[in-house]
Image 1 (cartoon, one colour):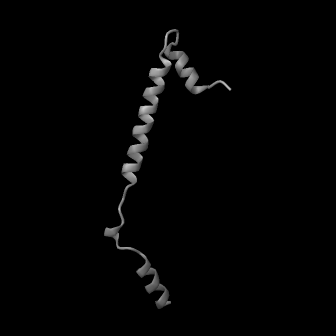
Image 2: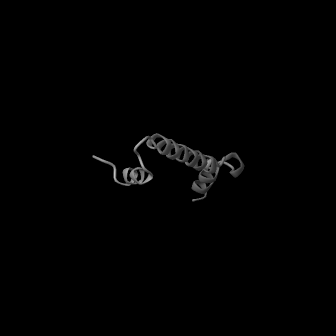
Image 3: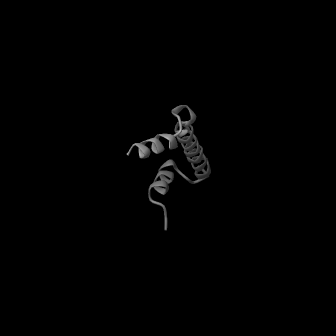
Length: 63
């Protein structure tokens, strides 16, 4: 059992060597989602398209 514990602790890297990028990844996805929503809003705001039509189109897309 002692050999298994030593091998397990040796395989793990020290905590300072592991970088945490979770926050940056989530922030990137959030920024992409906001930009996509703004692009859809401006693309759908053509003549004859009301805000209600855009909301219905986003909630219930046509097949």
